[in-house]
Image: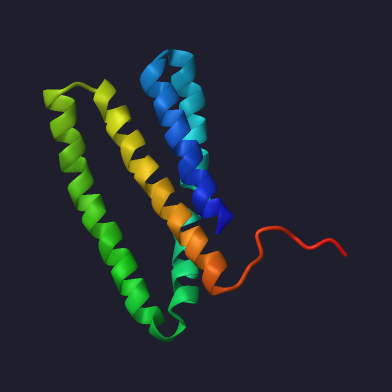
Length: 127
C-alpha cells in the first residue's frame, strides 16, 4: 500500500522538476525515474489492494479497474494532444504532474482507509 503512494509521488515530483528545468540531462534522469515508477507494478498492487477491500466482488473490482484503465488510455491522449497543440509541449508535463498529483492524493486516501479498515497501527509497537 505504501508503494502505491510512493511511486505516484515520485512521478509527480519528477514531472514538476522536468516542467521547471527542461534540460537534456533532466530529460534523461526524468525518463529513468518515470520509467522506474511506471514499471514498478503499481497497477497490480492497486488491483490487489482493491481486491482486499472487496473480497466477495473480486471479478467486479477487476472489471471496474480495467474498464477505468481503458477509458483513461483512450481519453488522456486526446486531452494531451489538445494541450500540446493549443498550449505547447511544456504544459504536457504540467498536466501529467497534475494527474500524478491527483493519483498521489487518491493513494493517500486509500492508505488511510486501508489502515483504518484492517486495523494497522501507525507505528510498530516496541517489544
